[in-house]
Amino acid sequence: MLSLFDNAAIFASTSITQRIADWSVNVMETLGGPGAALLIAIENIFPPLPSEIILPLAGFTASQGTLGLFEVIIWTTIGSIVGAIVLYYLGNLLGRDRIRHFATKIPLMKISDIDKAENWFTKHENKAVFFGRMIPVVRSLISIPAGIEKMPIKIFIIYTAAGSLIWNSTLIFAGYLLGEQWQLVEKYVKFLQYIVIVVIVIACGYFIFTRLSMKRRR
Image 1 (cartoon, rainbow, N blue to C red):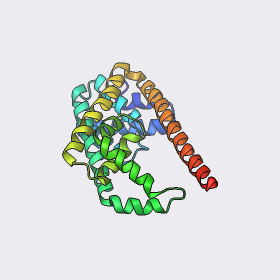
Image 2 (image 1 turned 60 degrees about the vertical axis):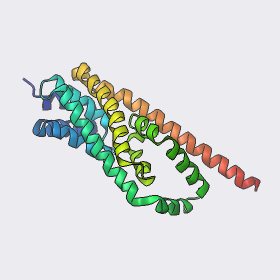
Image 3 (image 1 turned 180 degrees about the vertical axis):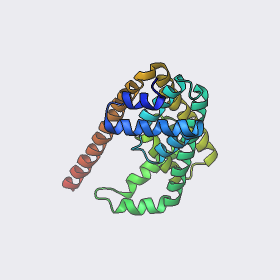
């Protein structure tokens, strides 16, 4: 009978996915719930390690009886909070003055752009952190401006925990229900991720275009 580790290797479609799946299952089989928390904490700090593989796979392990479903959800949410706090303090360490200094070195960027971004985040920081935790690409990075703007750490943790709980539960439940077809979750989340990236690229392109147009008119 195939072990959970063997199943993960069989159902991974690409070599990269397979290596991540193999390693993730090995960590969860060895460390249990804390292993799932460790994986998600690393994923938050190092976004190229994809949650769309780890979380559905954690749900799959729960469906095999290796871990409890709610145990996995709790541990991964703890891991999300820990990873987010690390990035929060990274932003705090960078500080507002350093960011503004770096911004002046970026072509076409103005201090007024930073001011607008700061004002927007200060006005919507609770919503930004909460919903940001459920958006691919943004979900890890949102912790950095929260640290830069010195968002109260208790409030930051509350909204991070709430957003992470929804995101983690959704992907874990999907992996739990799909079982050996857990990779379907990865495909849908990647599609959402591509949409987010396209929106970011379009927004950057629009910013560059408008700023160059203003420069020409001057």
